Length: 316
Image 1 (cartoon, rainbow, N blue to C red):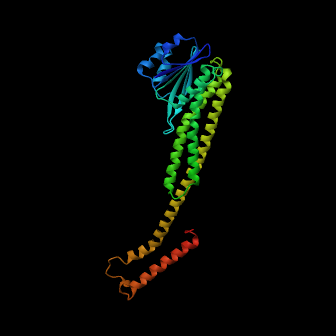
Image 2: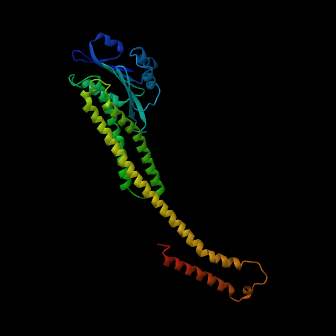
Image 3: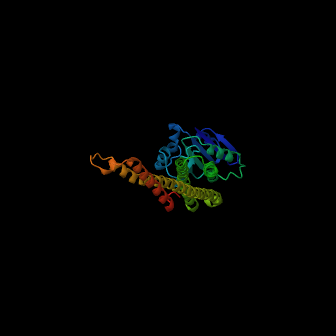
């Protein structure tokens, strides 16, 4: 589907359904949005706009890293939207021309719908052209990152303050799940931050100085998101180390208990092994009451060894 928003020389805002309708109006600038385009519509990138083949290839073959390329008077930006459910990045491509903006995305995005409504209902004097429309799109995409970051923060807070009935291994599994989400979020935020840094420092885009503050605001949001992610990663690292330490201490306690039991039974097993030998001539075998005497010695050894380990603090 292709939708077109055009601003005429007399500041009227029009919504058109095909690129051919542009010829019938004196258009100051326009925005063509390719949303889930068909193969025929995708061919318009070449046949109508004559974009560079490399840029068209980047649009058709996913998933490109956020970047900015310059082709004569057309500036090509790859930006990322993000799925709230999976935290996976989805590509949105922007072509910024002298008097137009072309957005291309294979899946419908509500961020683009919100940006469209903002540009459509903005007073014409505030609709500053295709650069401002591109800013609106990127701003909506970046704003959508915040709910995901805040949801992870809430999950960490609930994890720290919630009930502690779960076992250590379950806690560790949750910590690694949170860290995996943070990694996915970081893989989207950091490249976008680098892209906005390049946009702010490029000299190739004309009139960008008029929108420098707008794009700086997006860059500030990405910096804040990066700080949130880094802070949460540090918190999860502390939680991971804490629960791994608890797990290690618990294992040491178990091994110490098993070692004490083994050491106590070693001399008892030795005595039982001696009197279990099948020799015909063993003096002690003929002792009256020898059986009870050996049991007494074995019990005394066990009690003495237990008392000695207790004094040494093995059970602390």
